[in-house]
Amino acid sequence: MTEMVTESTVLDGDVRFTAAEQQKVIRIKRLMEQEKQTQWEIGDLVLALCGPSGNPDGMGRLRALAAELNVSDQLLARYRVTSEVFPRHKRVYDLPHSAYQFTQAYAAVADEILSRVAQDPRAYSATRLHEVKDQVLRESRIVPRTPARLTMPERFINSIITFKERVRKNQFSVSRSEALAMLKAWEAAEPYIRAAARVRPGQMPDGE
Image (cartoon, rainbow, N blue to C red):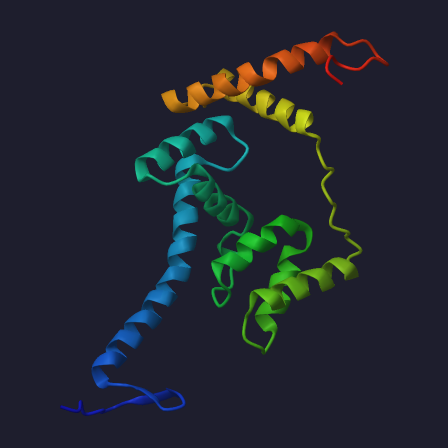
């Protein structure tokens, strides 16, 4: 039996949606509109509960909230920072939340980047956002800094410093399996680290 197509809409070539399917199309449109507002609302609520970023007490609250919601604290932190950098009067809801998450890294010119993208008659795209960002940075003579490449020992040292700070602030938790893996890694690295520490300037560690 062939289904009657009534109140249909031609969207692409011969593709037609029935009246029943149109209800789903409308529902998707409404959900997409709500998604923009929901992401901002999440960030606003996290900011209200945990305070601005950079606060040690707030970080503890953020981790507790993440555990309560069963999500990563990094996810909540991204939402919080975006709401913090872009308060309500700076938001243009025609642009996706992801555009603000990307642009917040260029705080000095973020408003100009987003303003140009929002006023562009062409449909929004991530490619266009990157193009405008590069253009504004060139005009402002802001050269994105390339972070210095750290050596493996330097990365290891930074990890240890971060670990010590989190332990000191009671912000570190580790499972038994993670603890065992850390001990195994340290047992493998310790002889080499101690041997290198004993080497005098100009000498090579044992085995080299």
